[in-house]
Length: 137
Image 1 (cartoon, rainbow, N blue to C red):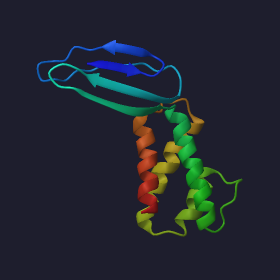
Image 2: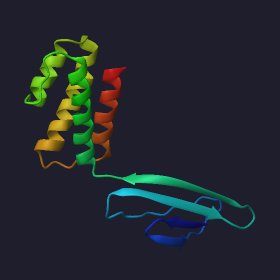
Image 3: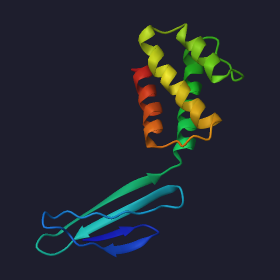
Image 4: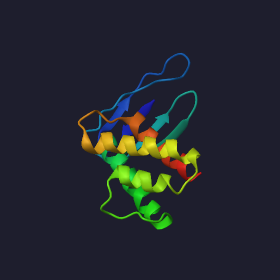
């Protein structure tokens, strides 16, 4: 199998008996990259996918800020000068208790991402993303 990663070049991979193979890449820059794979031989196949390489800390902050902008249009009393906890408290006073947990998770995840040096990875990004989805559902 041949795999070409845009900007990193092409490699030839050996497939296992079950037809699978794997490769690991390290991206040193953020951005969108195309990965193309093709298999030649007893069967011909090819495919292409785009992957987005991000800094999860930046993405958690972006998600929170996007949520805040949307919330300001929907809820009363939200202003730019509020802290995340003030925003949370203001929204909680206007929504059903079932919305409190996802809002707490989003606020806490944002605070860790924006105010600390703790590592922020995919799990924290997913927590923030899924909290927003649950809140708006």
